[in-house]
Length: 182
Image 1 (tube, rainbow, N blue to C red):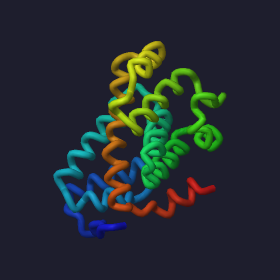
Image 2: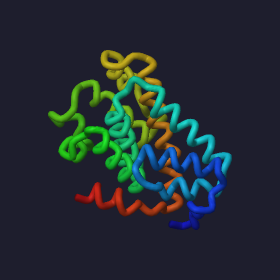
Image 3: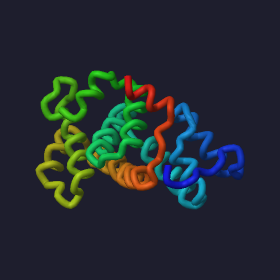
Image 4: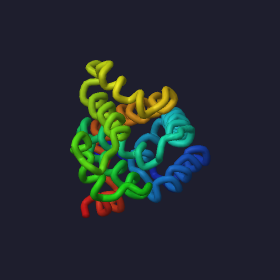
């Protein structure tokens, strides 16, 4: 890591409770959370945003993580790619489906609805200004407007997280690295 993370044991109560919630959701202490704890207001705001995106949706939790995985892969963020792969597998996505994520357009593991969502994630992460109306038109037969907003929210959240973790060189936690490597 390029910066020293906060000490988990010395966090104030409000940040400690945010970390506990994240640990309960993910199953480990996230290094990026400890880095973000150095900026308490941002950590609180990002926590609220994350909870709203993951918690207030009709999207499948495995799909949410696949969307984030494709966006993170396209953005080149190793840390978020590891986290989202770990999360996808913990939410019912098979390793085979995950390993085929970059071939979403042709893989038999993916439905047309999933392809449309992953196409948006891919294109958004590479060049958001170039997302075409055709990409959105492909979403509409499968997803209602609220679900499309939810898909864009996941992609947008990871736009921030991909940059945060790539720029800071956040170390991937051992548990996540072990799970996604084999």
